[in-house]
Length: 144
Image (cartoon, rainbow, N blue to C red; front, side, top):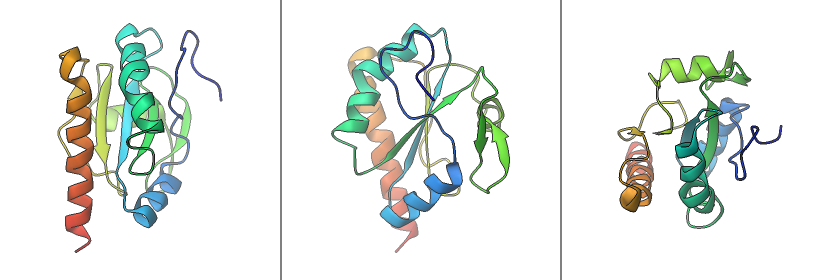
């Protein structure tokens, strides 16, 4: 599946969260869910300036990054293996605005407070880093 119309940069869409959960357990890493909307210039900026570079560089081997399109019923497999859609996943996490970042563990449990909106652009990368670090610490503490 290609990027949504108008996107110059992209994260992999959530297709099989159960498989991602298995990777999370095996590699002991959190999963970052990026809730996106087709016509969202703030999402484009968050992707281009922060999330895509982080997913390819500083967090490449330390977290999984997945995109959820909140306004499209794209099919996906949920953490428990049941068929679902991107729109239903967004509803379950209470996501109504984009961009929203939610860091979860292998069972889909939220590990750090969600980041709603682009917030202060100068600090957005730090907010995402902190959320990922909290998620990684939470996973490490549960496995001790």
